Image (cartoon, rainbow, N blue to C red; front, side, top):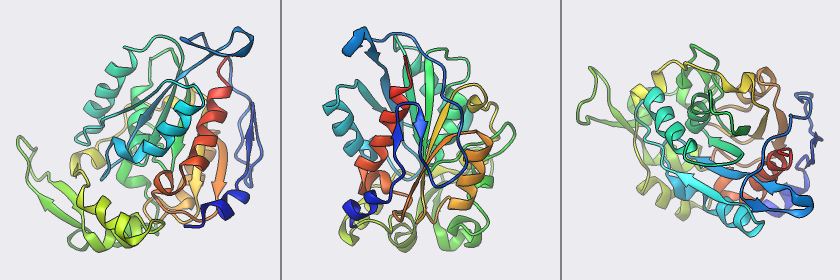
Amino acid sequence: MASTARRRNLPMTLTGVTIAVTSMLAAAPPGGTASTAPTAGNQTKPTIVLVHGAWADTSSWNGEVTLLRRAGYTVRAIGNPLENLTTDAQTVQYFLKSIKGPIVLVGHSYGGSVITNAAQGVANVKALVYVDAAVPAVGETTAQLSGATSVLTKGKPADLYDAVPYPNAPSKASALYLKENVFVSKFANGLPHDQAVNLWATQRAATTVAFNTPSKYQAWKTIPSWYFISTGDQIITPSSERMMARRAKSHVTVYNGGSHLTLVSDPAAVTKVIQSAASSVR
């Protein structure tokens, strides 16, 4: 992937102001409280918490973790169980409550649904960042938000997934693995072939329950948000992402190209958006 060339086309986000190719912009978010990592002017940096999506694990954030730590942030990429939206969000929320000081909470893909619920009622979450992610309203499921032209919407389940049983599963529930051709050509289409195959081989299954559990909360109603849209995403379509970002009044950055895994292929571009959200926290 020619990430350098694509980054030239990226809208840039500067301290509280987003310059984007869309009109989906929100007012500058309110200030936060102090954390533990000192910065200039007696300000302190928030902790960045990263939540991965389906068919992935914490390693999908390796590039962002490296860059954010280099910039002086405390960063935690935590495991998402991928089992049930309600309990997955509770798992993340318990972790958030262990952190003192302000938090920037970041979610990719299904992880967007998780952070939308996990942040509810956690006062020190000061910003949400969605990276090619689902951003549900109350009552919506992640499966409803892929978009009409998504591979997941158009394809037949038998052609998309290897479905396997798992212990204590509810009736008719399965654990889903993306088939190799779908993962490589549609999910990770922005990555070199060998890297995409390796990621397919090491993917974690996500359950049908996770995708079909209605969201109980919509934390983006009260917490300022940022949204990173890859125009090459075939899993959650750019049109669906634009709709969700507009609804959440997110600061939007549009990335020209990429895939559903731009966070892996071009972590510097994603990191810029995360840092923009972090810079809003005072």
